[in-house]
Image (tube, rainbow, N blue to C red; front, side):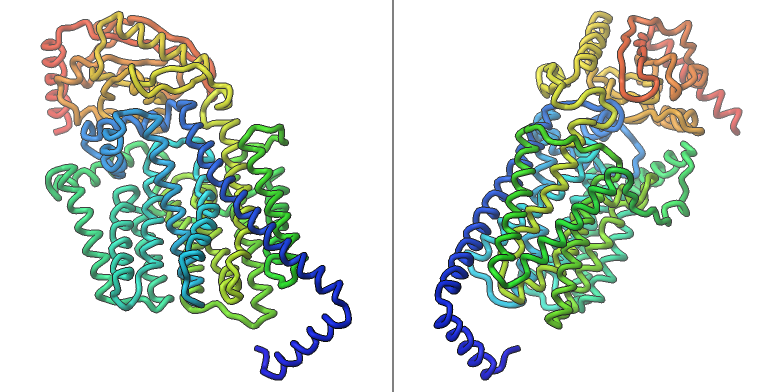
Length: 640
């Protein structure tokens, strides 16, 4: 810190310089004004870029349909009470939203994206406000500026869509829950003010949602929250009691709404775990306690290093006090924003290859700006406060709470919640900027961060998960649900749906009729038919225990439903179920069903060419019901 004499000496030096070289001083003044103007332009363009990116994603929600995972999500959300066992309750949480949008899949996707983006903005804004508020009071102008920065930073949450599965699901609900909990953690404090009370309540709500989305993530969130509160010195028994009470009340309320009783809800979850274990998919409780590193390879490694270098250089330049450096940082921000806008508007740019770990590029931005912040702290002898250190640890860990319990690569799954990593780096950097009382230093970093979601969305658009064409080439309008949910599809997909409906309608199929999917891989087919999936929202095939899984699911169905169900088969599918397993439910496929038509089409996974056959029951419903009940009694007597 400068002493009074230092300040006087500095003033004398400046005065002398002014007297000796007034031309240089005027030039510096002009450069300073230029830097401020360029920062303002960069800020405006980056905000526009983030809004354009959001609008682009919203428009893309009108294109593409994925028949496996997305079909499963929609079967669950549209009629969650059809199924008696479940580990995740995301279908019940999103069902009111599904009803609110009238079953329109496009609107459902768009609202889900807006919720995700809105929560990301809220996390960023609360974080920045808390950091800058520690140094000085924030007026309305600064609050609006930080809100704009948060808008740009929040766009990084769109990296979650790297597979282009925008329909609400247990992963999106988990991420949204963690964001709610993070907002609560930032607001909560030892003193129970209005904002602190709101924070403790949000922690409880976020934890409750996390439990309903993915219990394993909720358990990890609880552990991480306890560590954070202890490190930050926010641990207060009264506040924690409020959070636990709110979470418990939330879960109990959900249990009563879903199953009418706590006993029934507990049985639902227990049966869900038992049902999942029947698949024998190679997962175990021990396997979720593992560490999968983040791997970037090939072209992605080069992109990672480039982004890290750009982020570090931009952050370092922005922190320098001279106007020339700030001009250079603003120019980089303008260039990055221009690239993002060019990508959105479809100008010819080099194609970004699609690799499963692409969202991990956000960690390059986080590392780059954190390094710049640390270097500046070493020079100025600044230190992270206790609360800042705690929030950095918390934010770095949150993506792993999101991934905890997944059967896929931990690093890849965690990267889809990489917004938290970026925010962790931003805490280190923003602490220095707040000490300088210069929120404008954040603008170039926000613009650089826009590159990652723009690249992720661009590659997802070109290679949507398990779809045969880029989204931009899917131009055949088709109502996913007759009369609503108009989506643009590939020609093969539109033809497949049209032919399927023609066959079903010509043979007396009605919306809501039960259908048993023996293909093992096409829950979306039943959704576009308007069918009620029998037994489970997705009859997962291809696992060692798939037959036991389906048999247990059908055991939960009344024989009246099994008796009148239609059947969808795929004779050449490797995941198909053996028709012999139906005998334990009194069904002889050759004698009791007749094929009413077949549809041939193509898809992105093996076998790429496939044929689906729709079979209709020919026995009377009463005969089929009696056969089912007799078969069940015989099987039970043998087991006893």
